[in-house]
Image (tube, rainbow, N blue to C red; front, side, top):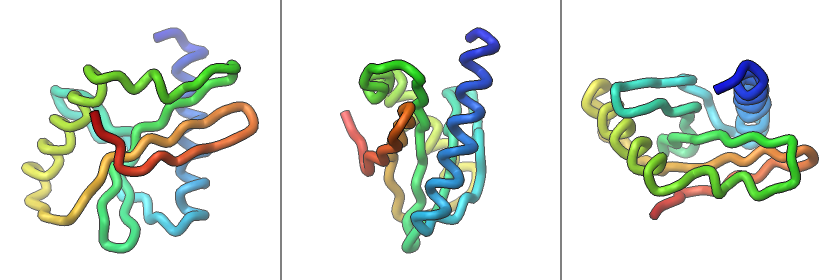
Length: 112
């Protein structure tokens, strides 16, 4: 990953946190990582844990396509690791937050 992509990702995650807080989410953790992968944001709302993958673009394409099956499976394994590490049994869902030039979309409870 190049420096521009890295910076764009950090900026996107910062914007995502502000957006989620405005929707009533409490941010618990950012960039939780395991040997399986990384979860950008872990948040809670209405007693449900949200594991949120953030995808950012400055281009004119559908950024949600960048969450492919392989990346999704890495996220699922990382979520399982999170629960094992934290001895937690809350309800949860995996969400995708897409940041575009002029819009933000939260796609809740994604699956493959």
